[in-house]
Length: 210
Image (cartoon, rainbow, N blue to C red; front, side, top):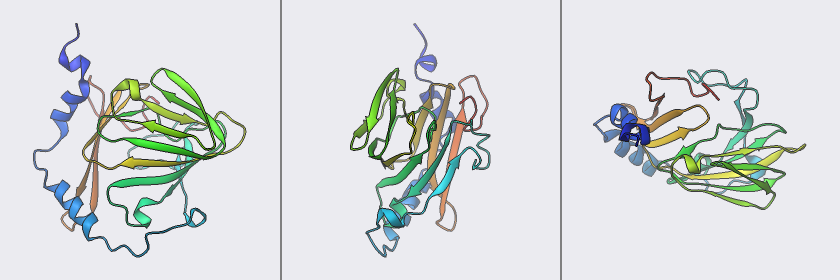
């Protein structure tokens, strides 16, 4: 039988990487609580989109493979959300936004607004279309999920997630594990921290092996 490190590598990685001092978490909570909410309503027509993935890689993330390209419209911070994150994601034909991944902490939900595509969960795939709800609860590799547009038209969906921190994500296609923590700096501003690695050692870029 495999040892604990082989069966649950994310626990080993978590012990190696999470700092003992958790004051940053309370700082993030205070920052959210003190946010001034100007308007709790926004119309989908007013959402601003940014490019994500191929051609819009973040510093240190590596180069995204061609299939990963999307437009993301962040909603939650615009209307003062505190414990949920949500965005609108638009996928062109033949594209996905993110590698297949699972969450050990947070739960996600998706609602298809327009178009159709394919949902992968673990080793199974499901067709999805306009009007479908998708549940992605936390768990191990068997819950790893990805939405892919295998249709000839754009696929648009709403993504909703709890925002608990720290978070552990696993990427089965590339054998990576990521630890993510939302900290605050000395001025009280968000200071995200991440550590992505394989069990055999060393940090790797987000897009490595995908």
